[in-house]
Length: 304
Length: 139
View (cartoon, rainbow over the protein chains, first blue to last red):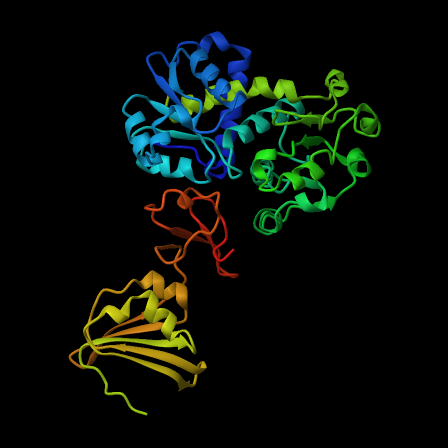
């Protein structure tokens, strides 16, 4: 039995395999409509989320399975003080696979240590969010046709943005990756990610505060939201939240085949005027999220 | 200064000078009934100065904890006046129950019965990170 807590638990071969299955599902979803007949997915969301929870539920329903769960801690026995381990011991008796989101970092790992069924980390605080990274990877592969030799720009909150850290780790395993880090001083990528991921893998990277200056280099622009919930101090949030707003003007010098990604939800960091630009891939990205989760559920349930 | 050699016991040797008390406390040697000698600033050909701990009984020690405190330590187990075993230590891959995670966002901050486990992520720089949230030890 295998869980997925951190994207790096998957080898590049396994990621290729998931991307391949995801692509086949996109081409012929009907062929997968009964792959999980009789199986139950439990979605344990101790922290609110629209997109990720619905994406998991849609994925399981699209495979013919069923779903149960809760969407906030107050409607679970966690509100009575039950531990993660006990909650999961119980829920794993009712389900075949679990997707868990929790505000505390490491909670899904604890769950996987006590669960009778596979656990998928659906986001643990500011830490890991492997299925978002799988979504990003499927999007990149569909938009670009490859993972190798891409220059990927990350813009916005690179300090607390868990999706950024995970995608940088995942892309660092591909040949020819170049990383461009665009953020205000206060939200720079943590030095341990630079040391233990970029430098360790010999990935060339540059840091800047000027998005427009680096725009012509980019094959992928990964925009992020400055997340209110990651700040202890409201003042800091208000000061930094509008640091980067992507508008059509700023895209003038961008490559014609640039792909703009965003894990969503956006607040105002991408102007709605950009939505019409064919380079805006973020709503296609949402769609890919459902298919890659279908592929992942099948893999963890050992269904061919 | 001389300390009697031991017949049955453990000699923890080549402890970096000044680290003996830390090791004594972490290993809980103060709770033992037998004699325990701490020698500080002993002249050493290899280290210049070193600390030594002699324990007058053979007991199970947590090798990982000793390796974490100082991977250059050697442990000699003495039986009937003869050295039964000499153990060279190294930095352990994982260490449990020694360090505490200080990240307020970590699951261990709210579920305090969870074991505090740290894993070695950079052997050259001796970096340990919390197993759950990956926060660096001491940060």
